[in-house]
Image 1 (cartoon, rainbow, N blue to C red):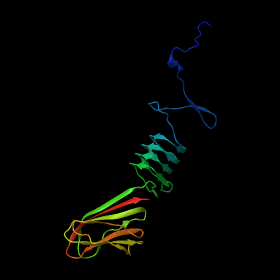
Image 2 (cartoon, rainbow, N blue to C red; image 1 turned 60 degrees about the vertical axis):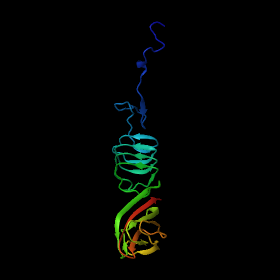
Image 3 (cartoon, rainbow, N blue to C red; image 1 turned 135 degrees about the vertical axis):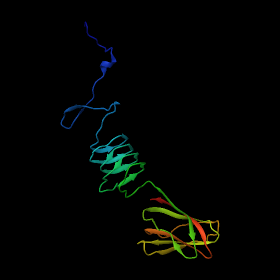
Image 4 (cartoon, rainbow, N blue to C red; image 1 turned 180 degrees about the horizontal axis):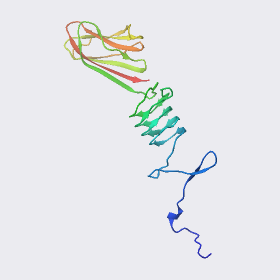
Length: 223
């Protein structure tokens, strides 16, 4: 047939627009950003894999699974599963709470409340160069209600032996002597572990003669 090309010789002319159809059956051109990436607004549902560069004014994301959130604000999140949140702010999280954070890494942003972290987290605090006298003296209590395992590492860096004990409490006022530690000689260490579980746990210490100095390091792991 004269003047009729069966094959297209110019590939640029093969380019076409991509359309999507809404719930009413109307077609719309799918938009992209300046780099050609699809512009997607998540209204409700699950983001299984990928990166959310910016989230603005969405209602509820039911699940964020294996995703990376790099910027923006999440107004309501139900579950964050295997996700990485590197920036941004979580403002209202189901009455101020994320129900579940499983295998997630949160390196920046703001969380108002988290009730449980299933991936075991490590907690450490320390008091160094703490003076010890012959008077039994308790340290500040640690809230251990949310911890699975915990212990106190005690190093006697002073000249005289130090006696220790673990005390536990349910109300933070009245304490029970859970266990008596061994006498820690000068230059020696001991690890104190509570035998009973209560909301508050603390170490008390004293010397039998003279004064000494101890370092106390608390290590714990979440459930």
